[in-house]
Image 1: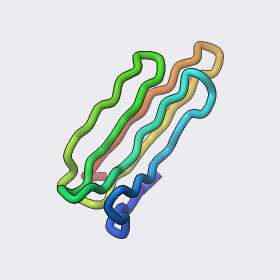
Image 2: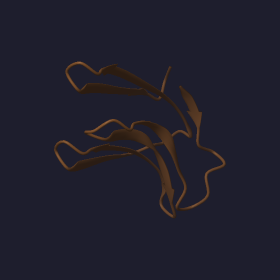
Image 3: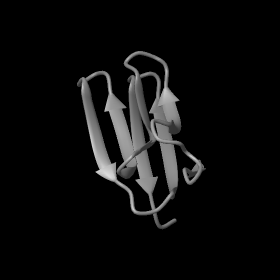
Image 4: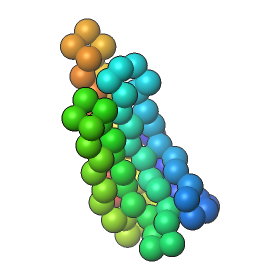
Length: 78
């Protein structure tokens, strides 16, 4: 998925998610300080954040539903 977060308003969030338990997602969040790449993992109850310098980001999600595993990848340079 190519996500262009330029038009996100403060407090806005856009991304991709796995809704099967354990729940997980990756996306872009806009705050007053700018854009942040955010990844949440319910299995480990952890959230990771990385400041973004660009509004466009590529997100990739690979799922193995037999093993209940998801791999999230991102790229800011294609």
